[in-house]
Image (cartoon, rainbow, N blue to C red; front, top):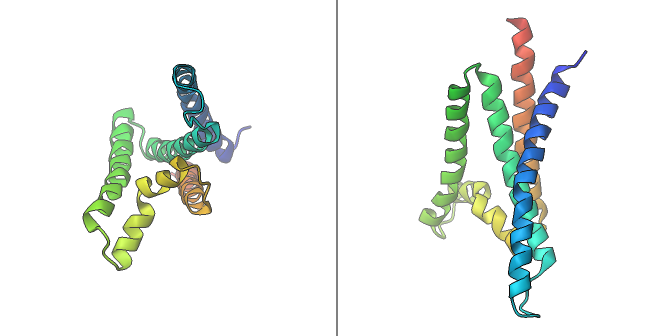
Length: 157
């Protein structure tokens, strides 16, 4: 017998594996760019690896949102709509950072912390900071936990 946790994790990791496989052709495109650029032009493999690591973390967060939306309803269209709405909301919070500018206050700090651009800037610079790691892994874990609770609650109905 397969438990609820195994179902939730299998669905998430299958989607994550597909997402990572979809990103792999980009390495081939970067290899073509490396081939045609001048030697010593500053094409850094470690920088590329951290950028792809950031993309995988952001993708994992969005995939966990999609899994939760899928668990909330039986309709695929409603699940896609919920997932799209949650994803757009998280993405649009990133743009609030630019409208708030350099304002001080709790709202500005929360928006700056939730901004995907802030987290991705670290990865694009080649910096592996623990704050984006904790943010994405924590949010992904929370969404998967909520997904598990939704799946478990179906037994009580």
